[in-house]
Image (tube, rainbow, N blue to C red; front, top):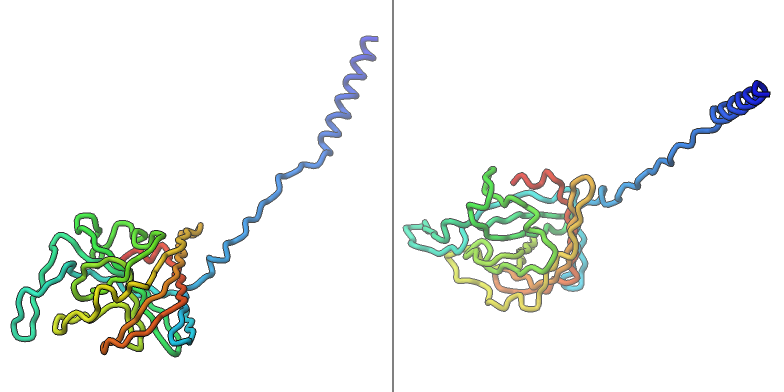
Length: 235
């Protein structure tokens, strides 16, 4: 009887092992993550002037960065030379993005003054974190960009000679009054980092733009998208 009992157990174990061997192995489902369509986005800007809407786009629009003397003032004039001084331990840093089509070219300039000790030296002095220029929120229009360089914020220049800031030359008096952009607005509404390391900036804006004769036009319904890769921060 004991032998029969052991034989029955062995047969049961045999069939259990056979069933286990034949049972299909269920692999966990493979999750295919959808690629963010913004990875294929490119820079674009749109706005209206005199009832005409302009749309400009480009795959890469960053093309220059610069250092300027903040709080510039003329110390002396010798012949045609102007000697400028200002706050020596600081620098006004700006980044320029340009987009164009067959009709117009537009430059968007982001502007901020930094203490030199907080910056890194590459080809020029630059902020340790370039993205500090692009945090979400509103920006002032820098009316004195290229001249006194006191104000932080943004500036816009259009190829037809109209821009949001005044004369850059000390040879002429300041062109714009302090209220020149009182009814204007520039707001960065979104700054999104993609998995690739690319940043997508979106902004909406309106402004008054002026030419050298102080003729003004209203720039309305402005929308900006910038695609900034991790390689854009070397300057």
